[in-house]
Amino acid sequence: MDDKEKNKNKKKKPKHKHPNHQSSSEYSFKPSSEVKGLRFGGQLIVKSFTIRRARPLEILRLLSLPPPVPTHQKTPPIFPSTAAFLPTNFTILAHHAWHTLTLGLGTKKSKVVLFVFESENMKVAVDRMLPPEIPLGEVNRKLIRGLTGCEMARFKFRKGCITFYVFAVRRTGTLGFSCADDLRVILEYVVALNDFMDHTAMLAMPNQRSISFAPPAAMAH
Image (tube, rainbow, N blue to C red; front, side):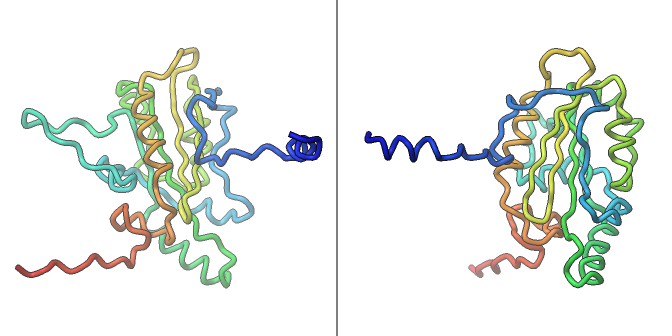
């Protein structure tokens, strides 16, 4: 290698790793009071938009995960230590209205929030303080700062018109993370999702890129 090539290599800046490609080992747990929460930029009106608790099957549908296979006539629980929040119908309509009223300047990006607790017992204990519906502007104060005595690791993924926030939650002073397998699966499937072209795509099948997708008609036999 000559001197010119060496100088070129020295001048090259290291490539920044895209957040969607970061592994859980690169993140550390912090006290809930220090964890970054949801971000809204300058569009504060979005704070009044609401999200709701998701049912277990809705989590699978959103992440494009297959439903669990029953064993011995029993269906295994779906991420028993995980709680998820999806945009409400009001939020979906409000995003469209805000985007139209601002002549395209208003954001159409929705937020999905998932909490993966260190154990099913911890989730059951915290369930009492998780409301069925909550404005986005109160998530940081009530659901993140409100979990006193806990540590969190925060993961953020932009997927087109939907931004996913995933929080791994454990008790302060706990070593490791008991539900690391569930966390890994959720992160892997979020990373593998295609970008949502329309923020209402979460209402369609998860492998669709838009709510307007029409499946091919079945062939007659």
